[in-house]
Every structure is written in C-alpha cells, then in structure tokens.
Image (cartoon, rainbow over all chains, first blue to last red; front, side, top):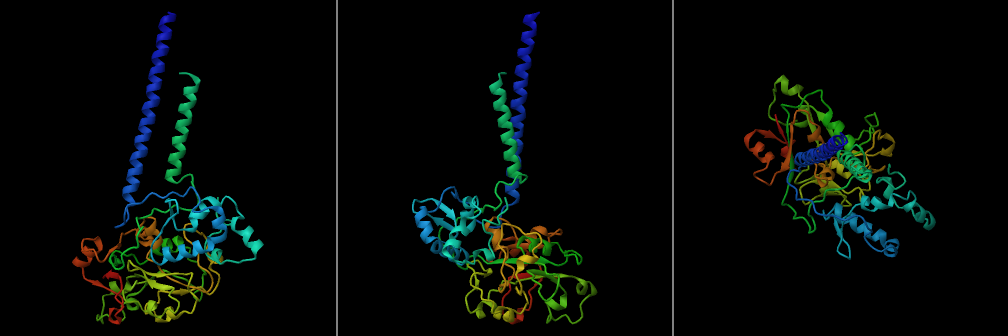
Length: 139
Length: 258
C-alpha cells in the first residue's frame, strides 16, 4: 500500500514537472511570436538594419568629460542634426548614439548632475530650454 | 520536487513575466526612449533619398482630426487656444486654400467640401532655406527641410518666404501650453520658428510618420521619391496627383490625390 502511494506521488511529481516545463515553453514561444510580429509591423520604410550600440559606460574618462563636455556636445549636435552622423565612436572603439539621452541614460540617476557644477561655475547653458534636464526626467 | 528547484522555477517564471511586461510597455524600463540606430557610421550620401508624402484626399474625412492630434502630441506642439499664438505642424484646409490657381474654376461640391491635410511641403527648392540668415533651416541629405533650433534666432524671414504658411513662431514660452508632454522629443523655446520635420525623429527610431500611423483611413503614404519601386512612386505613377502651388517652382515633396 505504502509502496503504491509513493509510486503515485512520484508519478504526480513527474507530471507536474512536465506541466511546468510545457507551460513555460508555451510562454516562451508565445513571447517569441509576439516579438517577431511586433518587429515585422514596425518595420521602417527603407532604413538600414540597426547596429549594436553600447551605452552602459561613459564615452570618455570623467576628467576629460568635466573639461570638454561642451565641445563634445557641440560636435554631437552639429554632426547629428546637420550631417546625419548619429554614431559616436569612442577612443576604445565602443559606439554610442549622439544624443543627450545617451548621457542621461546613466546620469539622470542624479537629479542635480548638470545643475550642481553649473551653479558653482555660474554658467547658464540653454540646453534645458528645450531638452529635458535630469531634474525634469520622469522616473 | 525539492524546495530549491521550486524557488528557481518560481523566480524564472516571474522574471519572464517582468521581461514580457517591460517588452510590451506595461513596465517602463527607462523613461527616455532608446533609439534604433541605422548604420550611419559614414556620412549619408546627399540626394540619394528624397522622402515624400502622398495623401489620398478621397479617403480623408472632413470631421477627422486624428493626424493633427497625433502629430502635435508626438512633437510637444503647444496648444494656446487662441489663433494669434497658434503653433501648427499640420492643419486641415480647404481646396481653395491649397490649390488657389488650380485651373478648375468650377469644382464639384464634394471636392469643395473636402478637407485637405496641409503640412510643410519639404520643397526641393525651398524658399525658406534660401532666406535663412543663420543656416538654421537647411535641406537635409534625404530631402527633408529641417530646422536646427539651436541656430534659429527668430528673425522670421522663413515665415515670410514660405508660400504655404507652414511655419509658426513661438511668441511665448511653449512649455506652459503643452498639456500632455512626451519625453522622447524636446520642446522648443520662446523666439524660434517651428514646423513639420517629416518625422525625422521617428525615422531614427525606425517608425513611420505620426500622421500616417494615426490616419484611420490609411490615406497617407510615405516613401522615397527617388526609388522607382517604392509604394509612393507606384501610387504616383498610377494616379493623377496635385502639388500645392507648383507654379512657384518650389518642387514640393507632398502630393495629393484629388
């Protein structure tokens, strides 16, 4: 009797495992299907395939950025808006999108990121008249 | 089944759920939208592409304002609720307004009552580009007449030059009149001119123009006028179309099927 019960339990266990695996596999397939579908629907008219962009680290050492970020941003704004060259290649070969959002991707964690230094140095850049500053980015 | 394994499966399942939620937009991963970048490492070839738009006005409903609402929401266009400060990127206008010198002196009532979406024509020979003293308005490599708001000094020469009235001036700070701002596109500031950008911002993200996506009748076609196999060229080849005031020689990139 005991033997029979434990065997039944083992069977149930196996069937439950099977169920879990089957359900998660179904889920993954469904997710994959919807992703594919979404991709196909939002295909642009005649654009090129997207390229891999790494935006997890800073584009240059902090000391350089502290001293030269205005020149970098000035170059970015001209070449991306006017020449259409939106990819920045850093000295170590990693690639970034030329956008304020690339900076704010990490630096919006600190609400006073831009504001602190600009207050201290008494400079009043006009970026935030139009663009969203780290203070205004919703979270 | 031991406890560890059970925990593992639970956590994996919740992870998958969260990932799905983030992917479907239920849980915002990051408030500023990521760009889908085309491979533009090298400078794009000027003149290779010329974006154009074709509007089938037979399908356009007179009472529908969805293209305007979508465009103005997408680009943080302010709504001041008075015509003196009004900013518009796209509007709906009448036949006489858009085609004043069209030879049809007597048009059918149906066409007279039709509404025509009017936006910047992104002219190949644009008067606004010619008069801009600072180079803030320029013709891009892909035929889009773009505004570089960084350089606009608000002289409004372009507004005088544009024969279509496609441009608006920010007499006030527009931010006070943006009721439902989006974070993916900047606003403008007081003292700059603004206009339709043919959704060049959305194109960078791999999306079609906002007015095209919003149109419930699919009356709008967007595509490359230089590509003879594009949808827009096929439609242009098989339909009689009109441009706004072609006699001015501005070569507009927006076409209309009457």
